[in-house]
Image (tube, rainbow, N blue to C red):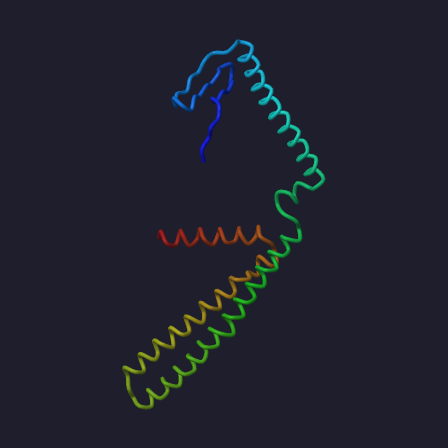
Length: 184
């Protein structure tokens, strides 16, 4: 692209900016005090208008938001809260069912099979096998108890009956006893 244009002349804040394409030099010259004053006034006016428009926008937003309750604005609507609670409850029910129907059932079957093997080991009079099967039966029983405790803690009865405050207080007391027991 080839430009055959005149010299570039710009007036900014009372200064004339002059560019001559042939020489490639830019020159700045002072034009007049009136141009400087008018340019500064234009900048002040622009800043004032920006502040005025932002104040107007702020009033408009406050007027729009004041028609809604502050609880809705900051904490979300009641329906969203209920939906989140129901999703949490559904997840907790699913986990409880999976633990009860899946892992607990398998451990029960394993415990029964271990008891059968222990009876066979006693009939065969294999002491080492009997001891190993006894340990396996104890571990299975402990795992079953841990799963029962976990399922019980998923839906604490105290939380369901007395609410969050009572449940947290009880949990805090329980934790402090555990910490004191660990120190002793």
